[in-house]
Length: 212
Image 1 (cartoon, rainbow, N blue to C red):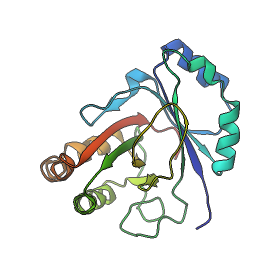
Image 2 (image 1 turned 60 degrees about the vertical axis):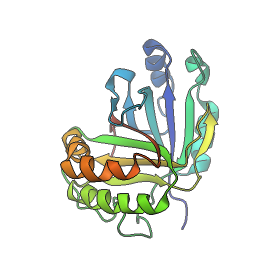
Image 3 (image 1 turned 90 degrees about the vertical axis):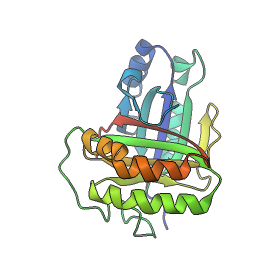
């Protein structure tokens, strides 16, 4: 399948004023798909660590790498270097598995405070994770949510900082209420989460979406 898009995901714990200045300085470097200052990040998974967050979209991985080379990351160097990840976007035609919700196979819904859910982590039991996905994917279809990035096998490139996970995904939800309804639903809390509690670790946060 031809490559059709890429994302840079940036997270930083720099002072708020520096992050705001950084955002102004990089205007025009990619399409802002999601953005949040630290206090705007909503942590869903216990143990998730909020940080200033940017999700930038590009035509392909090469364009993302070129943009990364021009980012003034020294503005965010303290208290530690920012984390910057490069990953491929889900192509417009979707993925090979039609059970995975993408923009190509999810019925559109009107946006009302749309959000991105950023999911990252590692799991040691593939069978349990397959059962877990069998629960959550239909729930996403019901709420008109879909993946814009879906990486389960090591195609995430670390450009800055430290990151040691195997799973990275971004899902887009038409509203914050829809994302919360999914997360707090009885089925997800009583069945979904229990399947993965003892087989790995995850961080899950919500950030405001800026572009469809």
